Amino acid sequence: MMLRRIAPKNRMKCPSVLLALTLPLAACSAVKLRVVTQGEYFQRAVAEDPGIPFAVENRGSATVYLQQCGDLVMAAVDRWTQGRWGEYSGTGCLAIYAGVSLALASGERFEGTQVVREAGVYRLRLGRAGSQRDQPVWDAVSNTFEVQ
Image (cartoon, rainbow, N blue to C red; front, side, top):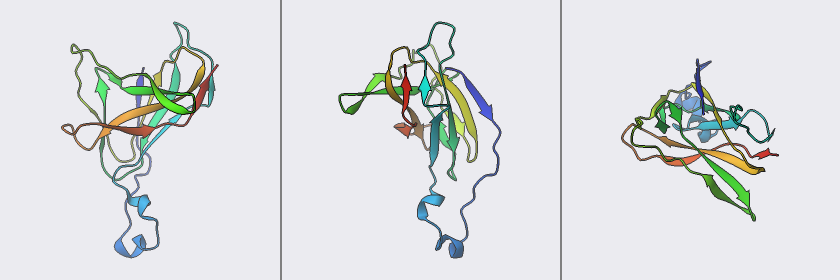
């Protein structure tokens, strides 16, 4: 999986108290990650294929820490089987690699790839935390995509 940092565009700021009364509360959520693949249909990966391209964008107002193994952001792959999601590939990290989280500030975006070698319906799930010391929560979920 490869990762590329994209400079932030306009950072969303929470409005003043008066304006906040007219906007949904979710618009000012401190943690709001968007995980999306760059398409919905893909061919199975081969040795030279970089994999499924995806992007992670922090649309919240606080910095989020993505789980990382060495230089790679860790993404679990879930597969839709028999009417429910099950983990297809995990997110283990060998002890020889640094397990330092990657800071994603408000408005920042990262792009990476994840290899999937079997046909099926999938989604990506990223681990996030509010600080370097917090335990990750694996609830940053991508759109559903199909590998043929």
